[in-house]
Image 1 (cartoon, rainbow, N blue to C red):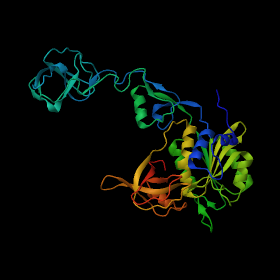
Image 2 (image 1 turned 180 degrees about the vertical axis):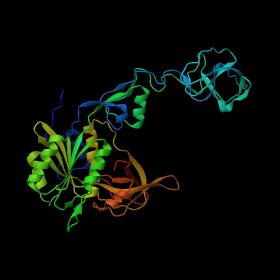
Image 3 (image 1 turned 90 degrees about the horizontal axis):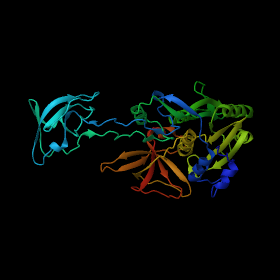
Image 4 (image 1 turned 135 degrees about the vertical axis):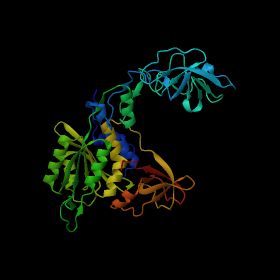
Amino acid sequence: MTTPTLSIDQIAERLQGYDPQALSASQVNAFLAQLVQPVREQETVPLMQAHGRILAQDVVSPISVPPHDNSAMDGYAFSGAELIAGQASRLKVVGTAFAGAAWQGTVGAGECVRIMTGAIMPKGLNTVAPQEVVQTEGDTVQIPSGLLQSGDNRRLMGEDLMAGQAALSAGARLTPAACGLLASLGLPTVIVWRRPKVAYFSTGDEILSLGEAPREGAVYDSNRYTVAGLVQSLGCELIDMGVVRDDPAALEEAFVDAAAQADAIITSGGVSVGEADHTKAMMKKLGDVAFWRIAMRPGRPMAVGRIKRGERSAVLFGLPGNPVAVMVTFAAFVRPALQQLMGWQAPALPLLKAKSTEALRKKPGRTEYQRGIVRTNAAGELQVSITGNQGSGVLSSMVQANGLIVLGHAQGNVAVGEEVNVMMFDGHL
């Protein structure tokens, strides 16, 4: 059953306290959660190509892992009943068990088997003495008293996963560990959601593409490369559409072309008050779009909605033009929305607590994101300092930072030593 698509107005009606000129950061994310519909086409891919993809179906373990009790280390396998409190255990070695094949002999009272890591535990044996703790003499070993308990150093059959047990859930991202887990189940392929296609273009007559000669009043397009990295690091497929001038015909062609092939469209520039309104006018003409002023800094102006082309409909994110504002609005709003588009059941980025090394000025009534450097002090406590100039065009401060200090909507000034929330980059910015 297909979930009906709600219009921008219908979503707005559901959002308590919706005011497009004064939205809080939390209201923006609540809105986007209803706007974005996940991609629902599935693909089967080889496991070696599955890293970063999103599972489309639950994976149930077809086997038990490990498939049998086995030794956790090189040593000597014996029955835990041989351990006697206060006494060393002296055992005769009657064979050697290697990994990859079951040892075929039998073990009686007072006997043990030399065993290698991963080898199947011989029948009736449940404990392994590490080779470095025993004393050997001819074909006997002596195990000191008090070092071991019955069952030590044995891996149990299915202690990782039992056959029939859920291994991974739909919506999980396939990390290296998850791919290794699937490989341990003997699964050569996996069913994933199709990668969403995300089209991006910058707007503005003042934007220079790399390779163009400098000219007065113009700046090189950093947003194109920043957004490309952000989109691709999530695992989406990027459609790079370059720079589009402030020309109605060129903008219409770009939006139509993007909507015809992409699941989402990201633009930068052209949504602020006072800017040339060709971009905003074209968004309105071609789609169902809302224009917001968000109570945040940096990144106040933003447009969201859908652009339609025939039967296709692409989610639109019209971001501010300033480079840092682009990155902050992406981290705060676009990233979780694209994760939802991907079908990725991703938890929100965790906020760490760190003590501010300096006083921070903050007006209540808006969320602020300040670039910070988090370190551990001599006492082992996390502390954070800002990177200096917090202007929304200062990209160098984003390079220096390893996280964003998140000052909440109702929060005021921060004193030296006061704890603040920090969103760590962890490779996503």
